[in-house]
Image 1 (cartoon, rainbow, N blue to C red):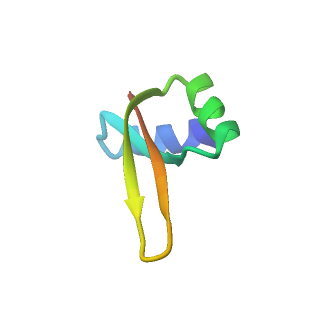
Image 2 (spheres, helix red, strand yellow; image 1 turned 90 degrees about the horizontal axis):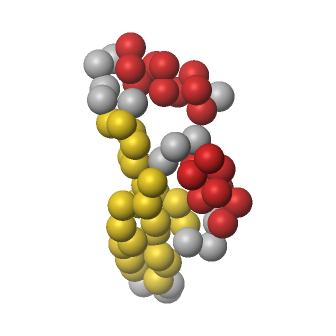
Length: 61
């Protein structure tokens, strides 16, 4: 499914893919690393009741 998503983005002229993964979701983070994505930066998501770290990942497609 990930490869199909990349193909769809490329067919629409996109050159770069990025996404955010919750820091606690290590399984997803490892999956995206295996697909060739790299860690770009961490960002904080704050709501009225909680604070979460988001890992921003990206890759050239």
